[in-house]
Image 1 (cartoon, one colour):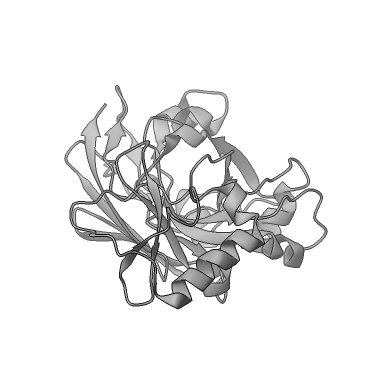
Image 2 (cartoon, rainbow, N blue to C red; image 1 turned 60 degrees about the vertical axis):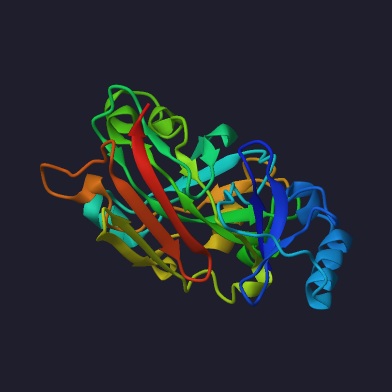
Length: 285
């Protein structure tokens, strides 16, 4: 299933994109798309039955904002330097263990919402990423297979980053990762049963129409199941938590000087095979 949330910011309602591409209203069946729904097999079954019946009301998509596909996110865990090609382009050694950092849940915005370039920023960068949405409580998992079994679905994430704040200002990466609007998510939450192999997905990103990233999740150093297993050793993952699993090569940080960091007026588009496409215009904060 392709689950999404539509409407003005803070007042989104649950919806579904059916196999024919029509937008269907789920608000009569479930209150929202969130961790509580993803952990409730009975409720998900009702949604599937309603889809098969063809009786869900059709929504007019014209002019309708698409919000983040997930409400009430508990935490956004991020994995850094998780692609062999990205590590090479930045001159970094592939990590022996996953690099873990956080984004605050309030950085999450819709896939077509405006992204704000922070004040005094000179190095705002792009990163297309596969987001993993947790569907079952995960703690101390023992295998990558168990890790995959705890995944409810997948989405496109844009891990926008400010490299000076992240790398040059001391401390942790978090200062360059948690600026307002720095995690567009969606358009859909695609349930795990529709993704045959999360290690066989193409990822692409364009800046002002120029292709910058063209990668595949096959390049991940730590695959999805292992990432979930690993993170569960250090924190409990709950339904509705999100893991951004890293970005492939092609970021501004990896380009020669002068590096083409983002400025107000730039337009970024990104997509992951089967998971949909995003588009953001950048403006000054």
